[in-house]
Length: 344
Ligand code: KG4
Ligand code: ZN
Image (cartoon, rainbow, N blue to C red; front, side, top):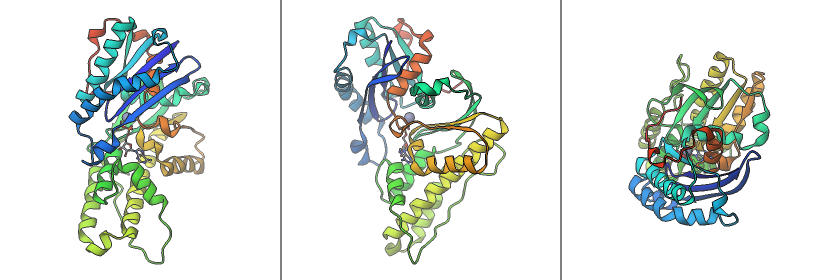
C-alpha cells in the first residue's frame, strides 16, 4: 500500500510517498519558506499560503519522480491545527489530485502526526508502549497527552500562552539570532565556551512546580526582554551575553518540559514517554531527557523521532493516514480545514 502525505499547516510545503506496512519512505520532500519569513521574524499566513500554492506542484513532481502516481492507494492531508489559509492550500491540492486519480482522502490531525512520526520505524509498533505520555512541542503547540493506544488520546495539559517553539523564536529575535529561533539558539549555545568572567543571566522556570500539566512561556520571553533592556549597549551586543542568555533560555525551557513530563509519566504510571514536534529536534532536550530518565531509574521507554521527522514533514502525515485508513473517504468535499482542531 502506498500513501501520499501532504502537509501545509504552517510554512513548510511537504509531500511524501510512504509504503506501508514496512513504512519504507520512498520520498519525503520539504520546501521550506524559512528565508522568506526570516525577513519578518515570523510566519506571515498569506505569504505562506501563496508560497504553498506555488510550491505544491513542484514538490509533488519531486516526491513522485520515481513512482507511478496512479499506483497511490490513498492520500493523507493535514486538516489542522494550523494556519487556515495554509491548510486550505494543501486540502484543495489533495482534493484535486484525489479526484483526478479517483483515490480516497484521509484527513490528518497535525498533532497526532507529530506523535506518530515515532511510528515510522516499523520496530516501534512491535513494542509494548502504552499507556504513554506524549509531549508535543512545536512552534504552535506545547501539549501533554495521555495516549492509551494509537488513535486514543486525552489532552492533560498545554500552554496557556506561547508555545515552547514560539518562545525560542521570540527570544532569538530579541537577541538578533534570526529565524527560526530554536535551531539558532541551539547553535549559539553549542558554541558557548567557559569564560573567565560571565554575566549569568537568570530566568524563571514558569509553572514548574504547579500541580497541573499546563505550561506558560510568554513570561520567559518578557523576562529576557527586561534583562536585555537593562544591559548597556556594549554588553547586549557582546557575544558572551547573547550566548549566556541563549543558554539560560534554552535551559529554562528544557527544565520545565522535562520536569512536567516526567511528573505526568509518574502520576499516570505510564510505560513510555513519547516526544514529537520541531522543538524535539533540540539536541540538549533529547540528551537531558534521556539522562533524567536514566538517573531517576524509572524504567520508562523513551521515544523521539529522528530530527528530520520532528520538524514538519509529510512522512508523518502518511503514517498517520495509514493508522486511520478506515476513515478514508471519496466524499472529498467533506474534507475541510479546522484551524483549531484538538486531539481526542
Ligand atoms: O513542528 P514544527 O516544525 O512546526 C510547527 O508545527 O510549529 O516546529 C517548529 C518550531 C519552531 O518554533 C522552531 O524554532 C522549533 O520548532 N525548532 C527548534 C529546533 N528546531 C526547530 N527548537 C529548538 N531546538 C531546535 N533544534
Ligand atoms: Zn508541526
